[in-house]
Length: 149
Image (cartoon, rainbow, N blue to C red; front, side, top):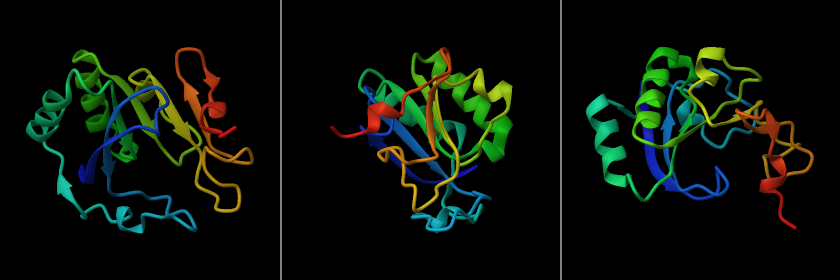
């Protein structure tokens, strides 16, 4: 599993400071995608367990959530990394363009963003979006948290 970026982000998971891992190999290739460099699995660097633990250790006590932008196509590896994050006390989130994810993946997540990017509908900050930001425990859609008043 390769990544192109590891960033601290503030908007993708409302109320959380997230360590965001952007994973390569996206098969959806949505029209209007702002990150087509993520389509090729070989792009980026390998996310080794040592690198992952180094980043989580570095931000423990500052960041509260581990967020993966993609990676569900590496299901077993992603699940392993999410379990580690949870064990270390982090909340977990996955941003996917898929409509559904496997139950065994859901059980490792606090939040999930689903559905493909459709340019004319916009993202989570659009009231017309097809995308959903879901709290897994309650199955509540929390898109309202992204809308500006």
